Length: 522
Image (cartoon, rainbow, N blue to C red; front, side, top):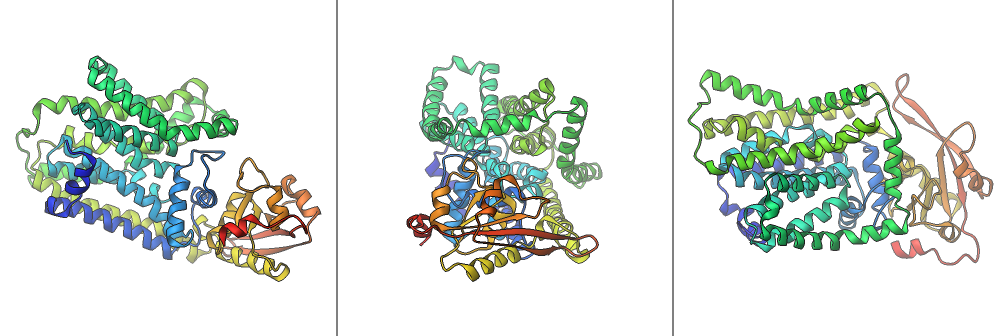
């Protein structure tokens, strides 16, 4: 088993790859570039989850009131490298996570399948919706994909080669990163223990020692976030409890969940049906079962079934017991082993060269169709018809208007915006330099800003116009040095919407000190 250095030197070396594997990397590269470029030029805004990451990524924290910190830290690093957030950069981050995950799926598949079938398994996996259009927003679901895939790979390697310390070290590291990305990674790690108990691997002292090493590394990585949780009253778990408090009929919850999963898996059907049709026609020959590691076949199938089904079953336990709602996207990383399992169970008797040729052709066609129809439906059609669409929110116009009003009345740079995540986040997406967002004037949701900062820096307050001024903003509006209203068109009548905003300016308070946010950004 290759150690991580060998992975970099050998597995990712173009000279070590054959023509088929270079074709796979070309497929992934074209996929990533296509999504990034179209996202950079077509939409005017992004998904709410992506905008939330834009807000959080402006300040390094060891946690946020909803989630652990790693996705925001990754976007923060990209923003620093490329001069601030943008729609193209957000999409590059999201789809880049997906591409890295698929590379780890390939590495895992190579341990279980011949090289051509390993590529087929990646192509199959890429057609699950969580690995194409559902990976468009950069959120904790898309960011969890590479770390979960890496955890599956290193766990498998560690079990097969338990003497290799590097596998256990990397397992602990990527599991720590997975938990810093999304807490649902714990369900994937639970599948590791289920598999060990099922296979009685706990009787192997080498594995127990390796798990101890992995556990130590995991705790070193995850412990700063645990400290943050203690210091902030376990805010993400309070948020999770509130989400799970939403309830409904168990029948409708399960029906909706399984229907959504079937839809997300349905993009596989054209490829699978086409391969079945071609095998019946004799275009893809059915051969005798291959002889690649015959003794490990059942071992691998048990492994794949365990790491696929255990997290899904555990995720369904809460709605089963409490009737809590279950967001279908929360399980996005749980389907990573699906393509390998399908290939291993159904395609190992097919001629590998013919199978790969047909699977590649259909995967390219399907991915191109998904890409085109996504942007047609989400951007081009709403733009032509004037419909109000999330990706056509006038964020640039909003940001320009905020800057215009501020600079007409203040000589200092705009350092703080007080607003909701969506409105303020769209300002941050386009403003340079980016101000800090004080989310709803709430220091629990935005601990990087406080009342002292508002006094020293001043702030621009903006909210969608309601019947009355919302409570978090009422005092700010009453004490403002200036205030007013403006409107922006979101789409065109009759299917568009006129957005009415109320704004106010809190001027810097004399004697409040130097604005530290301006100093930091300077």
